[in-house]
Image (cartoon, rainbow, N blue to C red; front, side, top):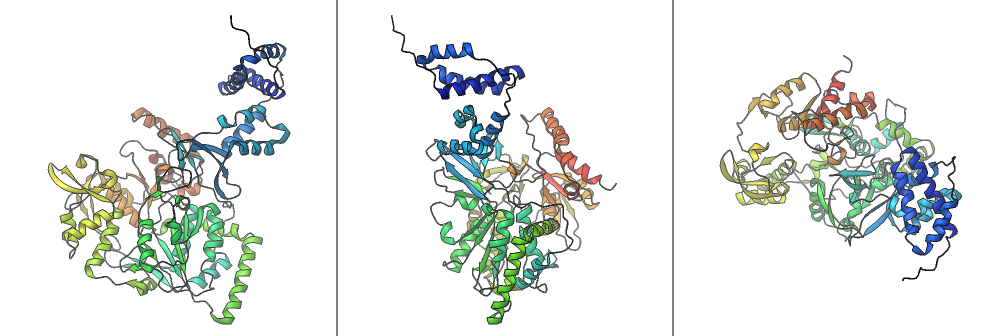
Length: 637
């Protein structure tokens, strides 16, 4: 017969935890709160599993009485604090590591141990700290699969029901109710110093007609897009050049850093990009590339990949290597006249006029006085808030951030390419832009359209742009087609909305071009929607079923991506998620959007959609965009 193990007494700490655990279980039982009951049971089980304390536990239970005035608010508040400020994720070796969010300090998340977590909780709540929460810190803190950076208000991103910690740090300064009607005076003076109003930039349409805008207007809109819509794509790099001491870096190191959030702004050199750990660079919405010791050509080659590719391989210390989405845009400041090699037809760079404001000793004193005044305004006179409120009145969607405008300054420093080289540059960017448009290519057709390039040069351009050659049937005929690498396993292209690119594409219905417009070939499904667009109505399109309307609206600046932010969309994405692809589930999530999100959009947010083209993946089936379009079309009617 086995001897009973010697019994031990309950410690003071165990008694305190048990008292709170029993109270939580009793309160949870009375209020039907299963989660609270479970928390209490975990503490009980941890103590009860020690069979040396069976008698002490039994005696304690017989004397315990429930306090009718028990309030679980203290427990709930501390549990929420842990969930808001900490998360677990998967480490490089497959184990679990813990991060603390440092949003209040405008700093990136940092790795911590559980002792530091408990110390933080104790310092926060002092003598009121919950014994149960302290004991269950590790369990209460949410676990995530990995970390993702997405500029949105969500602390966690969900994909296929898995949780990912969002490492984006919200900026400190938010727009207020103030609505200024003109640029702040000192901000206007600063823009006039960088690129006086007389300097213009332009885009050229298919008829060689130019749309001119002041360089400082485009420059300002670029910054506004990074602040207000950081999740939207921006493929334009600003190359700001000027004499030493003209303050060309002030807008980045002082203004942009504060308004996009310090954690979302990264000043780097080319050396940093080539280091072992570059993952932190991708947790940014603006990258400031400072003066570099690399050659102009090396810098240009590095930027070619960074600017045009949406996905990159990231290395972060203590975390597994992974591919990430790029959310940043690049700004370059330099004292050199031609800091990087820009080819004649390179559409990545916006090059404003050379900044040469008041050089010499007199200019040095004047410049110092101006920036002293501007720094005082920003920091002591609410200048940052005034700027943020003004930026809320600037409409960045009036400008194109997929293709940079031309300028005389850009033309002056661009390298004039040989005809074949010029074609290579143009073809590369065309292919990169079409990566997400379900377009398949025949190298022979591309070669015909890009003379004097050879077929081999065309295939090199396809590979460099991320395409791969596969054998597929299209229209019943087998071809050697070039598809984006991520779609290399796709079959039945013609049945899944893919277009076979041809030099003279006569499929579909031709839409005559008007002044300032490109000529488009529309499919029948697009004609009715196009008529509504022409009438100024807000419409909804499918990204893949209506490729021509997507391209047209992109060029017109009227496209609004209404997919979820985690899919590259905007604030207009539906937060409700379907459990399956049935029509019943579709109706449920659309109905939830109408009741849970639509009523909470401001008038300005709905008015922004008026006359716009809303892009999703649902049409022609029911889409939450239908509700957004109706709300926009009903304005002022």
